[in-house]
Length: 119
Length: 108
Image (tube, rainbow over all chains, first blue to last red; front, side, top):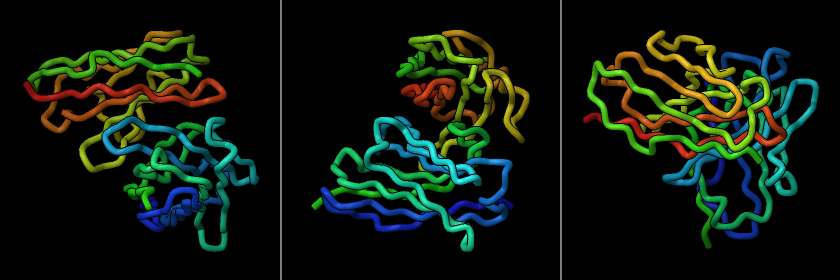
């Protein structure tokens, strides 16, 4: 059974870098069948697609976040990671990792992890 | 950026009734690349419909999607108690995927 689990600090200071890891079990992130990526949701608000990657090494980012976002992959651990630099309070959100059926179409989500940006 | 506007913001219905949720796009959605998600409090969203009308794996057939261009609809034929939640539409046909602001489906 597919499972995705986000992990990382729940509190990040303004101007620092937010770093999260998604550990996948029940499927290989090296598979050619799917993309894998991240979505976020500020408390009480709507959803924002952040980015995704394909097993070939291609990455795709939300243009509004592209200058601050990096998604990297560790196939040996079946994990992928999100780094978001120069964070502000506006980056406070629940961050979800997800399998993507298409490049920007998440079809199976992790439970999410709340990251708060505050000094 | 394609802006998606969902209506109504809140829909109050009773179990057994039919629900019709709308999603309007500011520009035509390429290839009807539009999805619908259901989200319950404290949980991650669940994909219901993709490509405007295709049901995702394991989704009951009381959920159906329709539409093209700029107007899309999610219909729940007969509401079950577990269907009361927030529903989001998403377009993934442009260079930037965007979500609507959500419709809250509440028990009347």
